[in-house]
Length: 389
Figure 1: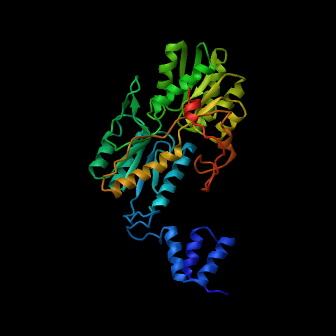
Figure 2: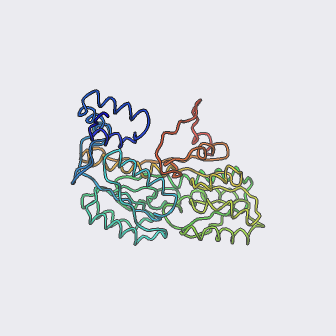
Figure 3: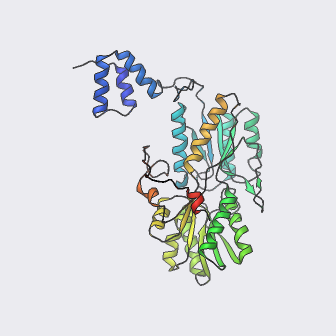
């Protein structure tokens, strides 16, 4: 039996080639050529050996070895399924760059600013390599973010960046480097325009919202209201609660009590949207409905025709891009300054929901396995340009 350098075995295992013809071919090549050379090539492809001490392992491409920067992500509902793709995003970016998996914490399910600030302060005390945080109000994070920045720790916001004025002007409230996430007020405006096409002529519209007043979802309601209130619609903003267990009962209770006058039922957060179809079915109400985000039951409800649309804001990118931006900022000695980045607004309807349901992926949080998803052949259509109004 041919002897194989253990380093080659390790590299092949790292490349997930434990079985199959690819592994046998590589092992055969290792026996015929220099095992050391094969090991070097394979280990280079794998990103080098494991990191030790305070140095990160070799990243992809020609990036140099760096300190093992430990990034921290602060979140307002870190157990919410919406943020599963976000976690996959920052894990994948860190792995690509040879960095430790970022820390994840804050408020488990209640959008508690004190809990979030406590976790953010812990990151500052631990001398984090960088911090990414949601900012769900415009005052509570001002000092903690400034303290981190004054300590030389770069801070980026994602998913929520404070609140907005009635005209859509952002009230940032922190000195963070940049924001990575959806343009929230504008997404509400686009939702309002969509509601006008689904419920023409005005009427009573209910908009469910988990936590009124918070910077991650209140701007969406405000954006929709800026379009609808001036066009003959009466909006009812109904809180469903931060905990997902409270959302369906809240929706059913309101719809049961008001089913005679409601012309449309919508939501501005992932949890409230995901329960719309169940709440409508339970109360026997058949009206246009829609909301935000890609919870699997929302996508299935769209496919079945029980609700009309949901809006994709790319939660995967909200984890992936902050890691890239913090890494490049540190790597370049602050020369590569991270830009504000809108992660998008895509309307998902029955016409284009197929690809979302047709394959499971880390990008949508429906699978823990990363894999290549072959895109459909033929012309490429911009879903934002064709379905946003």
